[in-house]
Image (cartoon, rainbow, N blue to C red; front, top):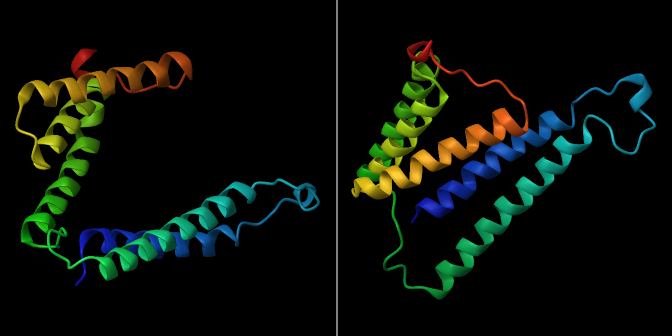
Length: 156
């Protein structure tokens, strides 16, 4: 039977297979042709590593299936499909709210709602798991790396 782990590994295998096809089609500039490391090197490395890890995940699932009776394995059901659909909708809402309410608030709400959808019901844990992550990420990106993040129309 197809479970979440096997399906996830298959999706990643398909993604990295397509990624590898495109990575090997990256055209090189004339001055890059003789370089050991060029603009196509990192995408090719990512593709190979992604394919290797996907295949290892599939192999691990096959080995676990042989050594286990299968009881207790997470199966794909309506609830998990519904959670996935709601999380995809939440991602869309996050991107729509990013500019109006700003990165910090949108990311904190997004993470809290995502944790809530996945089953966490303690509000203290929701807030302590989402707000500090958003603030630390914002500090790293804006202050350390110097990348501009939208403060939001709500605050301006």
